[in-house]
Image (cartoon, one colour):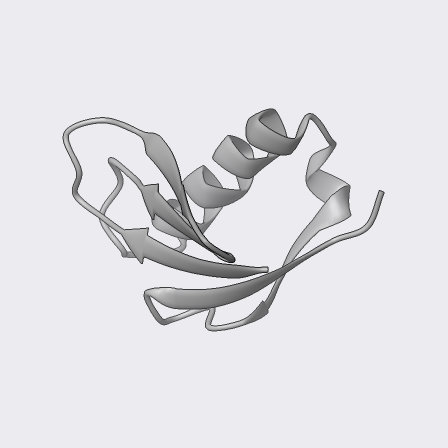
Length: 70
């Protein structure tokens, strides 16, 4: 799944645009805070556990590819 992350947003939000998810995060992109917030938000969105969601590509980029194993 392709994800575009927007950090420093006023509120958390997920918008689906075709095969892309735009995810708005409150955290700043430092020390993994935004990645942790992203994983927590996606676990709620997909109703799965944290262990089922991994960042496959783009850990230090706004464009990420996620893998979810259910």
